Image 1 (cartoon, rainbow, N blue to C red):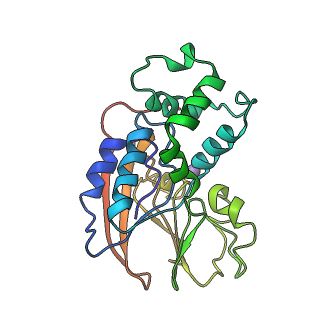
Image 2 (cartoon, rainbow, N blue to C red):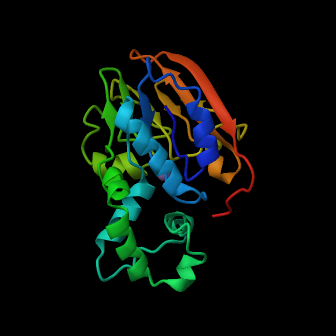
Length: 238
Ligand SMILES: [Mn+2]
């Protein structure tokens, strides 16, 4: 599975060449949109794949922010964060400088009416995906056996104490959101495995010039393979 593609379409396409749809379920860990240049293309690619293959998509905090903003009818300026800018431009490929030309209300209305399929795909992303032994989340969770309490918030946003806490959930947790360079002493963008071996972070900060990581993991939690694709071309600075 992979995470935090953040609008990096070329890298997303390339890393998907390592996926074998006949034998493997693809789990995406959210933050498909924002920061990078090609959020709409990334979304459409995943929607297409999900129609014919075994694909599970967990939502990230950036998908949540986009949904919240679009639900604020009449008050669209409120949630208009800088990190949305490139996402919005990607939804208007034929309008240069859409952010200068259109009001935020107009942009939001166009998105609501012209991009219903993409937005309902985002809205229907899972908060988490679990199997007997594994838990897939965007950010993390509380680490107690009752980890589902406040899952809606924790799974998308949490960093600490999830990163350094003791995992008592009974599951191996695979997550994105917190760049692995912040957890490795060496600032590596490679995947991070906690000392207890039950938490695996895979966000390689692709959009910031790092790499897109993907892992292959068995149902029992055995790490079978790791792949990464280095960021190509221009690097986002937001
Ligand atoms: Mn995130």
